[in-house]
Image (cartoon, rainbow, N blue to C red; front, side, top):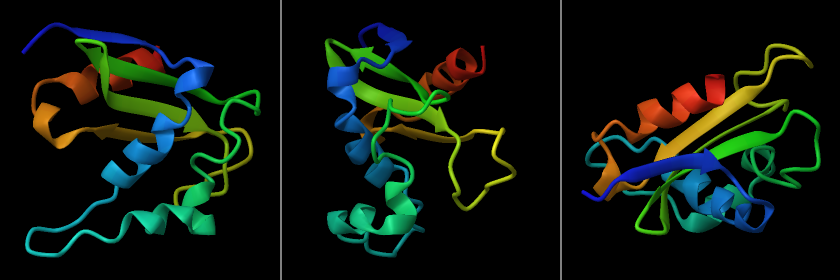
Length: 113
């Protein structure tokens, strides 16, 4: 694999959040993936809607040969793991063909730093 570049997400790349939100949905083996429209549900839109407009919104992309192959982002939101209004939740996703290469680990390290 070509080298992986991990960098801050640019505002013109925010649309990629929807792609990676869908990829982040856990689907057990043998179960069909839900339709892509599932990410339009309100409980999932909290992860991506108006990203970049809140002070705590931040994210990093993993790029290979100019293509975004992974994304890790955080924001304060009332999601499934909501703790309080000061603790951000995070989402992390890597395209299937690029998994198990350490990309998620690198994204998470960058976000936590």
